[in-house]
Length: 542
Ligand code: GLN
Image (tube, rainbow, N blue to C red; front, side, top):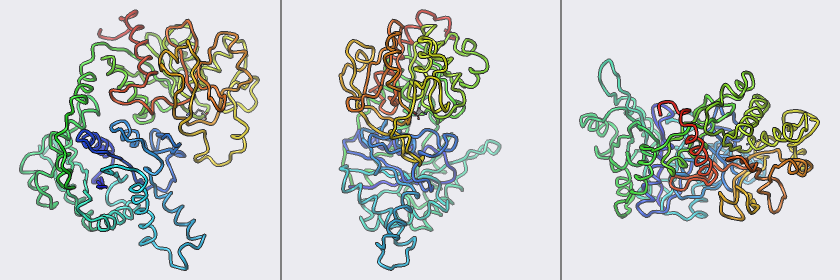
């Protein structure tokens, strides 16, 4: 296996994750089998317990690992199926070292950062090498070079590179080239200093990827090359993308990042044919239709809180050559001001996953408005629970229906905990997590969309549709179109005789990909397009 390590310098939020995912896509197009993974130096065991304000979305893998949203980029941009082995944090490293120490595994040694912690980090690289087959393993290191907590990871990589031989490793450092407008100058000093910091640790980058607003002039390129000890051609520019993040691989290809990496690693591969990717990007950039879809959530101001959902809309929109304009709506505002003001004129409404009581009644109002006004509706996880509560209250007359998440003993606990969840005390990794099967009932919207009897989707939730209310809701027209074959749990609900009303207990957004839109999102966008055709005036400017 060949190893690529991606570090970041100068500032965070440089798009290191996107650079890593884009490089993965380029290498795959060269015929290589690729795995991308992330090492995060923070002390949480995983991001599952972090607030979306801290961390954005928690991305869930098939095996139930709760991971950084960058793993979402890796899975979307490449064909790799990742597992919990591909996400390592300092929390996991120390948890394991301390457990070993308590068991006496270190045979009386003083347990130290070097070699015990570095060995633990390296052991993950060896484990992935052994258990997952690939030609290239890309590892992104979270944080910025110079952070105290990241230091030990870099030391481990330095050791690892020597152990597997430097010809088999390629270090890529992603930095920022700030442009000082007043002086009209691009500044290379922060990059020089951050590379110097890496070299202090003993790592000399092979390639420097520079995030930049403007083109890098040849003189600047030479300067970076000289100060940072790399060839000028190995200074790659990573421009701010214009329309979509899916342009990133095309941008990085212009400076031949994939070729430089292959050269550094001694890999002989053909020039990649990216026409499928180019076609996908063209469909995003030049849409022929336009819909406006409301996403009614709690963390609506945050760019990253519903990342995979926004990406799934991009994939479905590209499929239909339709621009999906996401209108982000705060559920708490809808609760205060009513649904009409915020939802009128939208071509579709989505309620995403979420936790906690704030804004719940706004979401119930949203589901009611969509049902009554025949607006295409997709509910995801909490969105499905809310749609069930709304239907119970307003279609079945079960006043006081609620989830036990929001009310201790509601009159009708339509959503409640399974007995096994009632015993759970720890918050971390204790939900129903990861891939579970769903059996789909024939002649339903779900079966029409999926075209399959059994599907597998990823879960992340604690509460469930309470089976005791199933008959009552069905009697009023709710269709339970998907259930767990082993668990009997309700996975999909829909309301027939509406243009499109479906809600799912799982997270379909985690499985949507470029050129392979998720069937629920593809169907939802198609329904929104039909709604837009009927009320084109609702689209500003069209
Ligand atoms: N809070 C709900 C639960 O725990 C929904 C979770 C979610 O939407 N991811 O079941």
